[in-house]
Image (cartoon, rainbow over all chains, first blue to last red):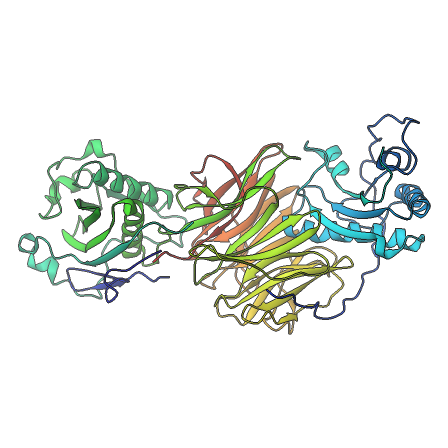
Length: 189
Length: 438
């Protein structure tokens, strides 16, 4: 703690010459205030695509237990990619998300968290908002394909959790994604 | 995290008999004939002599800290002590001015540190060498361990006397200390003195910490914590260590910043993918929504008088800077030049708004007048972001990341001339400057 020995003059530097300089000294839960307007999922015109989604790195194997997290990651695909500064679901992401929704309807106990991610060519706060848009775009896609809304939560990691630690366009393309993370309800491998 | 010093200061009453009467009678209003302009880029740094204060090691250390402070401002050029001719100077006698004129010193700071029990007494005098005139004479006293704090106060006094602007040296920086490579970064809340001394961690690294911001009126901060379960905004009083969450929200909460009086926090709330700006009264947690656009609205920052908020929005199709009333009224776009504009921050003195700009594949820190005119780009690199104002509104600290490299804290003055890395060896991001310490 700061204690001032002489309160009367503590904030003042006095000059011998008579001039004085002043050194200026410078939880309860709130409810969500109002309803928000949901933005359109794909309101922007399509732009030239960046590098295409990278191939999945895990070898495709047949030994994943159906209904397991591994089954989902290997045989369905747990990540879709986005164009620079975009959050509309790309054409090449559609089949993956349809497979995700089919799988999720087959295993109705599974709860998922959609994690929106961005490349590093944006500022932190803007990217948090952009990642949230991406996570929500995938959420709406899955809901439109029959997955119950109550099974899905979303989070944005902005540019804080890149899956590709490299720099350059390829790394940036990898890092613009939405990851469907299984939170609970999957069968144990 | 409690500050461990005590401190006081008063008029210096030593050695009056030896000071010329002319010096004693200098009118209060008369500024030194030497003056440093902080707002112009074409000024030469002022040559200043900073001999070791008397009193042994601590006297020498104090002069060293003052010298480093003034040199880093870019406005002063501390002279090499090896060139000094007068060696037996002490704070109770008038300097032999010809000896200082001979080495082209324009200002001279000398002093004496004296240990009295566990207290430290420091006397210092600032001299205008050409006019042979004393400009400052001050006695300061504090606990022995507060010597760096006293040194920064002396730097502030010298800076203010010679520039006419308030100093910013007796301040701290709250920031995010980063360890680990890209992809596996640990991001902890940390604090240090503005010169990089006394760094310490305030969180354990289990959650990602982002965007800590100081209150401009107290040693209180607000910051965001990011976990897989979502984000939260916290308030933390650095003096009492008392911490409090703004509460639970559906969706992400981020980009918190205090109102100038410290009574409110403006921040973004995301719901169903749409981010809007809200403001919370910290007394009763009453929350008001300020924007309703389906675009991204974030990075709110109050004007120093509290009547306006500058923020970024991509409602035009790309992120640009807007200003609205503090109640959300009458939003108006202020940036129209080419490029993407992010993270506007209103200066504490009100005359500029700092921002991050993306153009031509690079990121820049810049400043402009609050009406969007007089844009000045201060920096360019692969990634510059997160500008933070010094309390005097004349220096900006920011985060720079080189391609493939770690993130470091840098500073630049508003002329863009004095660009330099912060003297902190580790990786860091998201700096925020404290108000002047008491």
